[in-house]
Image 1 (cartoon, helix red, strand yellow):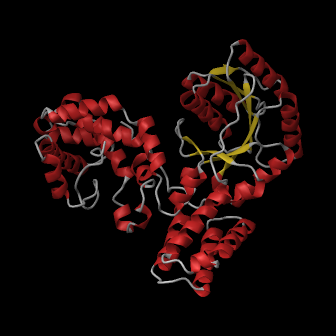
Image 2 (cartoon, rainbow, N blue to C red; image 1 turned 60 degrees about the vertical axis):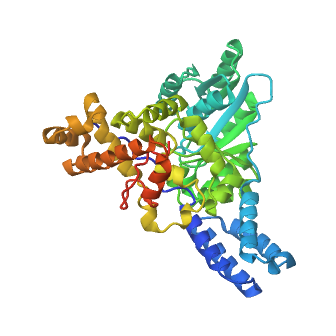
Image 3 (cartoon, one colour; image 1 turned 135 degrees about the vertical axis):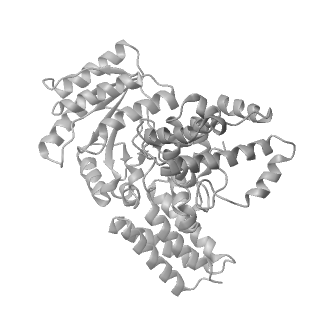
Length: 473
């Protein structure tokens, strides 16, 4: 049985966040601010921004804004100057990235047409499908998608497959069609079927060229979309901002979609694009899954960069992904004193995966960026993937009664089926047995308080042992 895909890469802004938090931590230990330590701190922040691949003009303007405000009387005479400077950095991060979330403008006679532009390899076609899903799920809109990329048959087939998977309307096209005819046909089909939104994928190139720009200008002029979104790979850093500017000079862009942010530890693109193009980041892609697209909230992102967490997004994730019915059934089951089994545990793991994995959840909690590295290492998504693979390799009866049913001969089959070792199976069963004992204590009166005292701050399935990760849910 194949292992599930590992959840999440190094979080976006990780590098910048670590550097900024180190700078600010040094500052907050000082009793008062002086011109010298302000300048030293700002120099360190400038280096952190440049190392995160933030464009030089953006980094320069950022520092100048903070310096002007930091040298004012309010900051210099503050009783908590470090905290005031942190707020200045936070507010400037928000300002640079766009102040507030810029929503899609769909206020027009249906269908509202969204044109997607971008270079080849930026994740444009996948983003079309992700955006269609977001519009259906979050905005309750009916959606039709089509591909005007007549140079890549694979792109047309990919979008057709994704549309079928999502259950959205798809307007067919071929490599012999004219892009303008495809777009007009899709819009007319949407009118006939009374569909709210049409999303049009366009051809990408490996680099910007005149032919490409001329074609998309012609397409834009013919259909007059209400939204023209530029899809750009965040991992290209400053190049992402420069490419966005080139497109913005040629097309009246209304916004940016930043893709592959789960693999971008630097974050330079997000901090540079708004300043260079003047256009807002409207969405960011946070993973490969079809639901891994989030509206871009500058204030929330700024808070995460500075280690303040993002509880609002975490609550929204929980609302979207946690199965309330299953959670209620599990609570009732535990209250009745029934055994919490490996089927229940697997359900909890799946819900953690749906919320972006342990690291995805932890990145939104305040103060996590300040934890020592050995503690961060305990929040291991790879370990959860291994655990789920082991449970999947068991028979249903083994999941329900692991203590009684699973013998040494079974462990060999389970380890081979999951691509793990017998030692890993033994470790899971041992830790799960401890977890069941905790659950039994919880079901008794006053059990929760006794349980919390007994845990003594241990972390899930890490070097410290303790409570498995399914428990908080």
